[in-house]
Length: 256
Ligand SMILES: [Mg+2]
Image 1 (cartoon, rainbow, N blue to C red):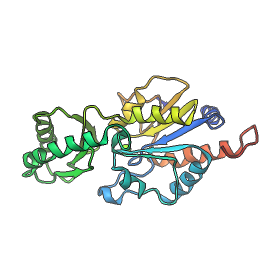
Image 2: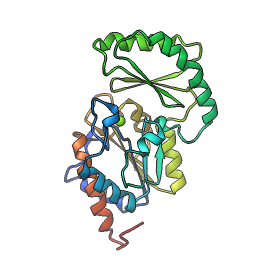
Image 3: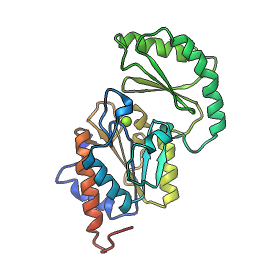
Image 4: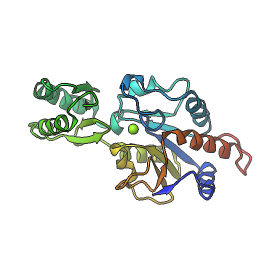
């Protein structure tokens, strides 16, 4: 992995800013810092100000694991062209079928996990998030959740996150599918994607050098992202660069 915000890579970010590019961002841990209570997640005022400007200058997508309405409510006055929820599946795909699958497995998981202290089942309509951040025995909680999901009568995709296990319909589009569809829809030659978690690897594993710039928050062994930001705080610098370079486009067009 290569640090993105180096003097050498300013040119790379500038090239991106001067080309027909789609910018896409995860929310938790990427635009907003990770917090203990997920309802409290919010962008810093500095991030929000730059992000609003980025949304005026570029086609932008926020692709989050949260339900779409939930993440949309956290974007303040910023107006990204696309807000995608539920790990890439909302909207898009056969939502009614996904909803039916979740309605079928939810009560089974609720009864299998009901007795576990500190485990919280979040229903996002088209997927479930089983949080164990509040558990005092995280390893045991995690193992019990995995057992409960793998013994469901219907196979589901299990996507690990930060002290959460997500349960997603097997045939649902993932974040990578969502990003490629949006890049095509925008007619963009290239896309930037920034994320911090296991579900973001669905984007990072797409091997299209020059057409997709994958950036992970935090360097991590095993990540397929080519670039990294050292920590979530660096998103402010990246957003500032993206504004600065696009406003100084050599062709003199300040806006897309
Ligand atoms: Mg995240």
